[in-house]
Image (cartoon, rainbow, N blue to C red; front, side, top):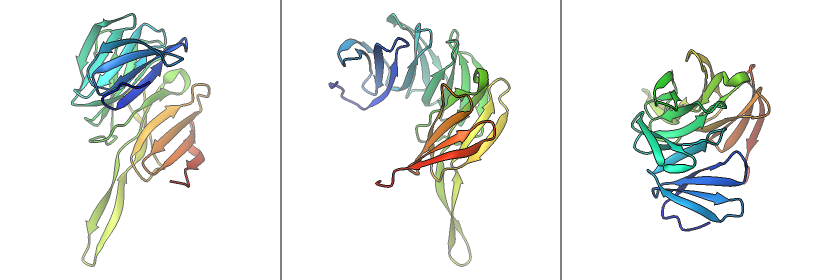
Length: 233
């Protein structure tokens, strides 16, 4: 599968598992079959992330211009676009295919109604200014929203020398309905780029960070149960 002129940023399978769609920064979305044959290519804004809804009716994508795009899965020219921020980096749709959570570089994750683009709830506290961070939904009945957060080294000058401290690098957990912060988890020593809830186990989620580690967490105790690192890197 070649022919791209810019980085390929995202990929999502259709619910039937027979086709998938790629998004990229070269202003095209492409559908493929499982054998890697291109089925259709349509123009699109420069895409950071995309997902097909569980009912297979919509493609939901976010782009570098801060817009959420909702496409008719069967007619890509039928598209609704909603301005949500300066830059959007991640999107995940709900199981009922009605809503999506979106990561923004305005230091917010927002819950959006896919029918009209209205923001239903906001989740704040995480740091996201520069890097691509992707959140997720999870827990029983998707009652919780998760997101990673950026982290960086901070030099604190002292009379004799200076101290190097690490800022943030946490995982944030909010209640989906009321937007309240439930937990802030320290466990990485770098930007937490992505979090993912286990689709078959509502009591487990994973996080991945710039510290070259993947961590598995138990919910609702929020205890870390597995630590994975690539010792060869």
